[in-house]
Each structure stands twice: as structure tokens, then as C-alpha cells.
Figure 1 (cartoon, rainbow over the protein chains, first blue to last red):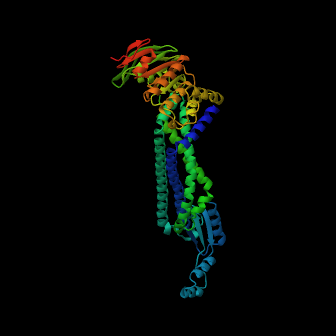
Figure 2 (cartoon, chains in turn blue, cyan; figure 1 turned 90 degrees about the vertical axis):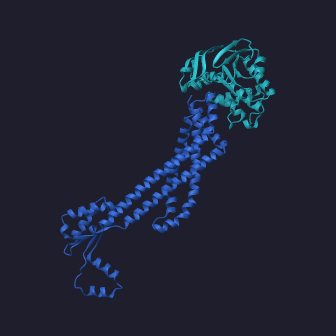
Figure 3 (cartoon, chains in turn orange, cyan; figure 1 turned 135 degrees about the vertical axis):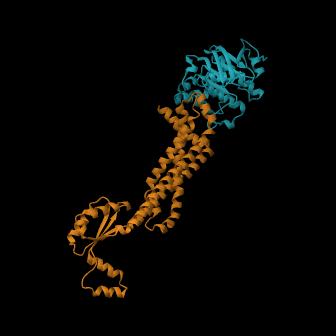
Amino acid sequence: MFTVFSRIINYGLNGFWRNGWPSAATVAMMVLSLIVSMGLILFNVFTSSAVDSIQDKIDIAVYFKTSTPEDEILRVKQSLESFPEVKEVEYISSAQALEIFRERHKDDVTIRQAVDELNSNPLQAALNIKAHRADQYEKIDEYLKNTSISQSFAGTTYFRNKDVINRLITIITNVNRGGFVLTLMLALLAGLVVLNTVRLAIYSNREEIFVMRSVGASNALVRGPYVVEGVVSGILAVVLSVLISAPMVYIANPFFKVLIPELDLFRYFYTHIILLIGYQLIFGVVIGGLSSFIAVRRYLKN
Amino acid sequence: MIAFQNVYKQYGKMSVLEDVNLRINPGEFVSLVGRSGAGKSTLIKLLIGEEKPTRGRVFFGQYEVNKLRDKELPTLRRHIGIVFQDFRLLPNKTAYENVAFALEVAGRLQGEINELVPQVLDMVGLGDRGKNFPHELSGGEKQRVAIARSMVHRPEVIIADEPTGNLDPIHTWEIIALLQKINQLGTTLILATHDKDVVNSLDKRVVTLDQGRVIRDEEKGKYILV
């Protein structure tokens, strides 16, 4: 068993190096496919960063009547914080709200004088609530409506922002769906290109397969070396695709940064390099090995 | 012992073999002759299990070839050595590796391979060409490598399908002499050929096929086509 296995590995490695151009062509096609798959992974990182960035800009605020005691507001804050959907709750007291208001309008003399003339603070305390995802605001709003102290609310911004939030939810859903379909289609296309290349390479070796079978080689011994060749092509293609992708990502990074300033695609690339190589290896090795396995099958009858 | 019993082979409506009955005993040297399309190659394909008969039975020693499943065919083929007209050497392997391959597929140990391959290469006169790839060899040398590969695992039968078809006269006679030598060592030899001179010089059994039928089967026969 070990002898057969070691011979399969040996034939596969020898075949890979001695095949020359067909092997190089297979590796080249695999490199292209792997660069596409790397591009898809990075595209998904880009779209999810874009979605996160937009989602981060959304929040809803609940304003409390001025008569509402602060400890009651803090209790609502606490209960909201226990929600899994809630990412962050910020309490803005009426004094802080006034401070912010003053700061915002410090250059507007009329507004500043009007505020100074007031005897009391007219601004209401508020809770600014951020959810993890845009589609979670409706649930939070529902809770706020049904809570026992809802009569203390002066109002929420959810109703006002509902249309915008819903539109964003639709956009996010479509981007995610589109990204998934695109990923699936391109991955399938990349897989088919590799399969076809391997099929052509094995087609050119059909005489060799016939000879192997005519001298009594078992199916495993005929198929095994080609699968090994496919796997070796996959591994080599992964190394090359990572070496080619790195400078490409480095060059493209500033352009992505213009669109999403908080996204550093190159940083993502090198901090996730092991994971990316892992994905590439799975794709390259599986597609290389499987393509060879499938391509040889038709020559193993009789 | 090889036997074809009432063997028919059809491809669609075209009949290639019709009621072939043939028996070849161990150690015989049999020339299969006939025009192109007479059924010689089909008979060989049936014997190595590459094709199945439409009707009838094919026996090779203990095996009823027509009943063997695909996964059992490699075992059968390890008892047979095949020499093709176009040599069919593995292009990415050296002469040594091509010969060794027949032993490797049979699961022979490396020590045994290292001992047998040089012996057989010496026997076919290629002791010094083991490291050469097929494209570095002449036609005659390629055919000698193919013969070495076919005999290295000591098969009971060697089938040579037009082995001299691509060779010049000098190499033809070298190959024929080699095949006779192998036969004298006890291996059954089936030679499918068009070469009248070769068949007539052998003075061995000749089976003549015509339109899928055995029309003549003579001990010490001659190449006679109607």
C-alpha cells in the first residue's frame, strides 16, 4: 500500500516537472482563477466595510420630557444595553445637549444671545442608540413604544428616519445578495476554466493513460499521479497568485481608501494572509485535484 | 491457454467478428494475418478486455475475459505483454522507467525492479540506453524498449500488434529475431501482422482472418490471402 502510494506521488511529481508546457498552462490558468477568487474575497471585504461604514452612521435618538428624572432615563439606558441588537447607547443629559448646542452655534451671535436670555434649559435629555445592523432599529423602536415609561418620551427619531433606514436596508440587502451571486458565478466560472484546462492537459495524455492501462495499471495508479499533478499545480498556483496579488492590492489600496477612509485593504491583506492562503489552498488544491480526478475518469473505462 | 468460443463482435449493425473459434496453447508462436479490417485488432482487444464480445466466450488461463469487471482487468493484463506498432512508450519516462513501469504497476519491490530491468534491457540490446527518453531513441530502439516492457514481468503471453509496421527491414528482422528468442524461452507469442515475408520466414502456425471469420488455421503455415 505504502509502495503504491509513494509511486503515485513519485509519478505525479515527475509527470508535473517533465510535462513542461501543459503543466505551466494549467498553473497559469489556476493562477488567474485564484487571483479572481482573491479579488472576490477582497471585494466582499470592501462591500462589508462599505455597509458597516454606512450602518455606523445610522442611529436613533429618544428624547425625554424635561420632567423625566435622570435615574429613570438611566434605567431605560441600562435595559436597552442588555439587548443583543443594541451596539451602543449614549446618554446625553439636557445640560450636555445645551453644551453641544452652544458649541455647534458658537459663531452664530443671534442664537447665542437667544440661549443666554432663557432662564431655563429648553433642551431635552436624550438617548442615542446604535444597533449592530440597520434592520434592528424597528425592533428597538417597538420595545421603546411598549415600555412602561413611554409616556415620558418627547419623541424618537426613528419615525423620521424610517424611510432612510428602510432604503439603506434594501441597498445593503441587495449589495449582499449581488455580492454573493457574483462570488458564486465567478467562482464557478474560475472552477470551470480550471477544469477545462486540466481536461485538455489530460486529453493530451490519453495515449499515456491507455498505455498505463494496457500494462495492467490499476485505476488508482493511473488516476493518482494526475490527481497529484493537479494538487501540485494548485499549490504552485496559490504561491504565485499570492505573490502577484500582494503588489496589486498595495497599488489599489489608496483608491479604496478614497471611497471608505476607514478601510485599509492592504492591511487586511497582510494581517489575514494565513487565512487568505488557506482559502486559496482549499480552492486551488480541491479544484486541481478534483478536476484531474474527473478528467481522467472518462479514460478509465475498460 | 487462450480460447475464443463462438465469438461474435458487432459495432452497431456492422459485424467485425463472426463465429470465431480459436485455441492457442502455451508456448505457441501464432501469426494472425488478414487484410485491414479483417478483425485481427478486434480479436486482440477482446483478449485484453478492452472490448467485450457481442456473443461468445473468451478465455485466458483461469480467466473468462468477457465476464471480468473493469476493476479486474488490470490483474488480467499483468499476465499479458503487449507490443504496439507505434511503440506507445510513456513519453515522460526514460527507457529504464518505461520498462520498470510494468513491474511497478504489478506491485513489485524496488530491489527486484533494479535487478530485472537492466537484465531485460541488456537482452534487447539497450543496456546503455536506459537513461534516454523515447524521443532520443530510433524507431527500432523504441520497439525494443516496448518489447522489454512487455516481457519484463514474465507474462504468459506477448501480443505483438504489427510490431514491425513502422520499421525499416533491418530493424524488422531484429525485432522478429527478438520475438522468436522470447518465444523459445517459453512465452506464448501472438503476432498480428501484414508482413508476408516475416510470416513466411517464421514457419510457425498461421491463422488467417477474412471479414471477421477464421478462414485458415495451419501449423507451419504461410501468408496466403484470397
